[in-house]
Every structure is written in structure tokens, then in C-alpha cells.
Amino acid sequence: MDINGSAAVVTGAASGLGAATAAALAARGARVYGLDLEKAVAAAGEQPPGVTLLAADVTEEAPVRAALERIHADGATLRLAVNCAGIAPSARILGRSGPHDLDLFRAVLNVNLLGTFNVLRLAAESIARHEPDAEGQRGVIVNTASIAAFEGQIGQIAYSASKAGVAGMTITAARDLARHGIRVVTIAPGIVDTPMMAGFSDEIRAGLAEGVPFPQRLARPEEYARLVATVVEHDYLNGETIRLDGALRMAPR
Image 1 (cartoon, helix red, strand yellow):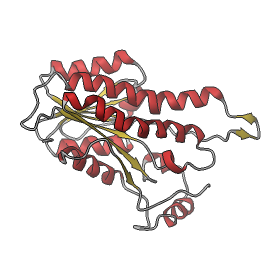
Image 2: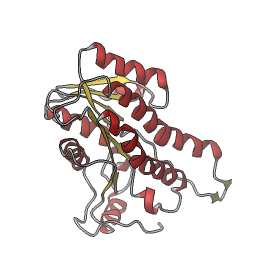
Image 3: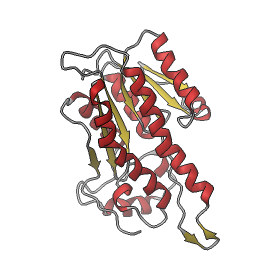
Image 4: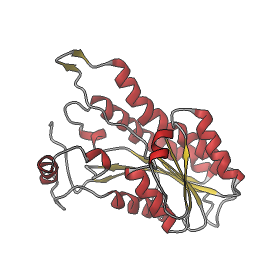
């Protein structure tokens, strides 16, 4: 799939993985529409050339549909969708204050899993409107899981469950959308140096990096974005979850 000249929708695009992905796709000639919460969009500042931020809650149908219709109204051909929006609160099943809060568990699944599925289904509908290329391909959807989907740490029960759900959707989504010429691939990052990590001390960050076999450092958002571009351009990648973790296998804590 050719990135140049295509339109792309990227969720969580105001910061972190989403911002890096939006910038990378725009640099390769895509017309990028980044979705994020209204507060995040307002605080994001000036965007790279080719990136337009739109306020939309990925867990709601109406704002996501409105954003996709905006792309269509602009005369852009949507070929790419990348789901980066997510949250990662921590809580144990049984903690000092009692059992895991049910509303917190529900909120994590709502953003990470339901939000991903919401954008997946609506973006697929929009992509399917367009004519296929010479290979019969109409587009690519890239979702974001986590290595926590496979070996979540203590306190990650909600996050792990949500990301395991994203990974679990991958092959079924690829099979469902094959008839429409749409590929689906999931990336499962390890520990990435995003703004979410900014609150940790240098000592904690160094300790996290020491657990990575090689290269012994945190991943960079730009490396995730480069992998997204590779997935888009490599037409035989489909229905797979790709780990991006430096061979890290998470310890219990």
C-alpha cells in the first residue's frame, strides 16, 4: 500500500505513539487526520505539515463518524487507520483498600478495547468505499496492543485484559475484512519512552531499560511509527501481532 497520497486517521495523535505516527505518515506523503480528546487537542500546539487534529472520543460512535465524514468531505481517500489511543492505570485485584474497582476495569476496557474496535469497524466501512489498487487492496488498519497482553505485571490486570483483547481481534478482523481488501495488523510494544513515562525518575527509567536484553534502552515512539510505515508498505503482512520490545519478557513486577 502506497502511503504517499493516501489519507490516514490516527487515534491518540496529540502525544506519544500517536503523535509520532501521525508525523511519520505525513512525512511520507499521507494526509493525516489525528483524533484525540478535546483537551488533548487544545494542548497539542502546532502540528507538522500534513497533520490535522480533530477532537473525538474513540469510545463514541458519533464523533468518530463525524471525523471520518470530514475526511470524505475534504475529498481525501482514506486508506490507513492506526489505533494508538489508550490508558494504563494500575491496580491489583486485591489491594489495601479492597478489590479492584469495577468502574476502573470497565473504563480501561472501554478505551483500549472498545475504542479500538469502534475505530476499526468505522474506518473499515469508510476505507471499503474506495476502489482497490492493482493488487485488490483498499487499505490497512494497524492496532496497538502491548507485551502486557502476553505477560502482564502485577497491577496490570485491566490493561493486560484490554490489550489481550486487541491482540485477539487481529486474525479474526483480518479474515473478516479480507473480502474488502483491507489488511489488519497489531503491534505490541514493550516499554516506550512516551510522555506517560515522564513522571518516572531517571533511576526508575534506567531500571526499566536494564530489563531489556538488547538494545538495552527504552523504545522510542519514532521506532513504533517506523514499524507502522513498514506494515503499511509490506502488503503480505496481515493478521499478525508483532512484538516491538527488544526481546523483553516482562517479570512479575
